[in-house]
Image 1 (cartoon, rainbow, N blue to C red):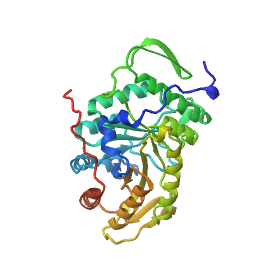
Image 2: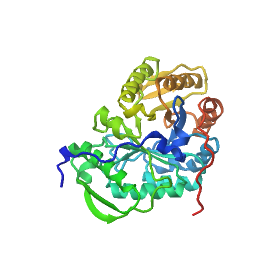
Image 3: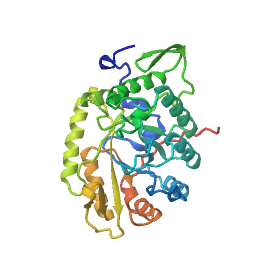
Image 4: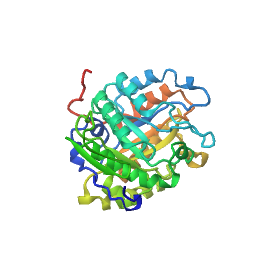
Length: 346
């Protein structure tokens, strides 16, 4: 078996035009444009899962309103010291449930922990979901940051960066057509296939942060990049974000287009003129819709192609916030239209 420290990936990122027929990717990403997605859950778990009751109805409203994407997080174990249980359900099982309740919205993991899960299991569940959803799956992926989870899986926390790179490479090899032979530090086999294949033969992998890799690695091996936004209460944060995005894109081979994604937790107040105000040290942004629109414009000018918004901390009812976003914000940052969705009657 190869030494993880000398591992050389075989499968680099795909050219952006490889996703020209990918439904989820096309809804979310295009050069010089920004779309809007929403994080689930719409309200955070506080010791009782009934907080999620009624969420499916609002998810259907999100789909009907033509938001670009729905995002779910991957948190295997709830560490009370970390203070965030995520969206509770297994991300792939829940996205399958959402796929059956919606028709258009892209389904996004934000982010699947590639260092904890075996690439065969990841590829099997991803291609299955891609088929069942009509090619709507986009995968945000990460190396993980919750130290309690790694020994629970029998994995050393310090190995997460190496395992992440190995898993990305193995995953991409599994998606190739025909009979496969794979030799990886994470496993090997000869003369077998991974079935089902994805609808278009490809699933976009959007790397979160550095995931333990260099910026050059992210430029070479990611199909897109998800980073934290920097400060959002003033224009200086988006300006610094623009510098980060430009430095990354300068390293991308042949200056191919790769989408950039960022996110923010917002408390959208009913006063549209309420100024952008940081809460909890900048972890949450309280703002009226005009301030949010201003931020989204600054992100777009910085090179961001998709904004994933979380409304879990909003004091107003979730349905009310989503209605305002749909009526007054989404038309300014519309979802990219595609000729037709790839729906299959299973």
